[in-house]
Length: 290
Image (cartoon, rainbow, N blue to C red):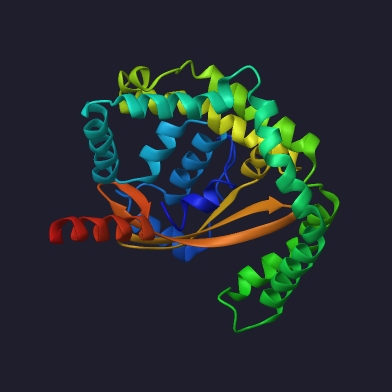
């Protein structure tokens, strides 16, 4: 759900927050559209699913039914294809990178030279990145809106402190993060491509839930607490006009409120990101032409 899913992947709630609603004009529009669900409630539901690591629920909540069914159908097509010995060997090789008893040591042997090579270059890269962010804040010609520039301005001090005090190229941190991910892969219980193909689409997604949780833990190794950001979300409904709505999500990142706005479209009783529906329509058109 490009345009809204990515912000929500770092901006959710544990299902206990109350949406922050705009003024009387929005309330009047809402009363005129009593059959439509509250977009703020749905955004918070997506956030709750992210917070609980419910990947299947997250995908279903952010994709229209037709797009979700296409994903499932594509999986079933691949699932029913005969499996070659080469595919079995390739799957076993890739799985062993995380599942073998010495997997972490081998991965670190691959990564360590790259960490060593990158360390002298990192300070300059960080300075360039922070400089670009500062220019985006100050320039009215940037793609950012005035509200987005203000949000970034508030977050910059905390962002700078995080970037300059976190050792992103630490061998110890890399090992800890890889260990968390490897444990999640091993915990899936899948050891062969044949076992994987015995599972339905929903079963595969369920197996991925712990991997999503592990990804959050791996990010926490580097000082980024995704769940804390998710827990801080506030949603403001800016406008509702028929089947179109605009909402603003605000999350606390690096001790500063960071806001972004999203256009939603009502389809079959649910709100979806406009970019998602447009992308889905483009894919359907490409398929028809193909």
